[in-house]
Image (cartoon, rainbow, N blue to C red; front, side, top):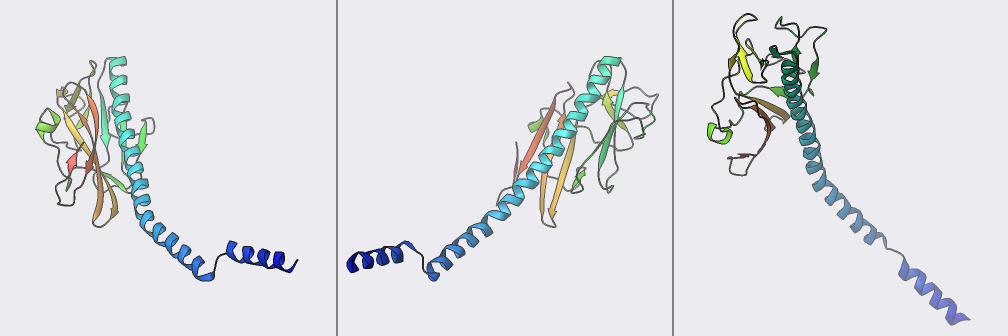
Amino acid sequence: MRSAAKRGEMCASQAGFTLSELLVVVSIIGIVAGLSLPNLSRSIDNARLNGATQKLAAVYQEARLRATQSNSIYTIVVSPPGVTPARICIDLDGNGLCGAGDPVTVFPAQVSLGGSGVPQLTAAQLGFSPSDLDPTLGIGWNGLGNPCQRSSSVSPCAAIGWVQYLRFQRTSDDILYTAVTVSPTGRIKTWTYRPSEHGNGTWF
């Protein structure tokens, strides 16, 4: 009986963990969590920016559809640089403003629209030479579904292609970039910028 009891005590002691072993396990978990959290945070921010990019592409698609259905010109109004949160609308009444009856899309506060300081897509990558986006000029689609730009509500809508860049400000030195391009033929495409350790990133 005594030998059986001793064997039970030995098995019980072997099945447990010592305090030092538990501390080692907790330390390992802490190290792994510390390494994972920055990557998780960046993945979440990437998802937010990609969501904003898809929203912008959807606005372009909706404006083009409206233009072809009504056989008229519909322009896009983009909030000026520095406005937070950035917003974009389809100008249904043609007054050049985002009014109460215009469908408005609001982007996350960290997202800004504009090409200042953004690594630029080249004409070779795009397959066309993009026009400079002037916030004071209306960009949109004509009744044939072709992208165009007009300088006033009565001026003709001249055919163009353009690039709209999006920036997601994570920290002062960590910025994520995406873009939505519209070719002169009306093809809408989204792009993501992948930075590299050597400073020369790539768009894909």
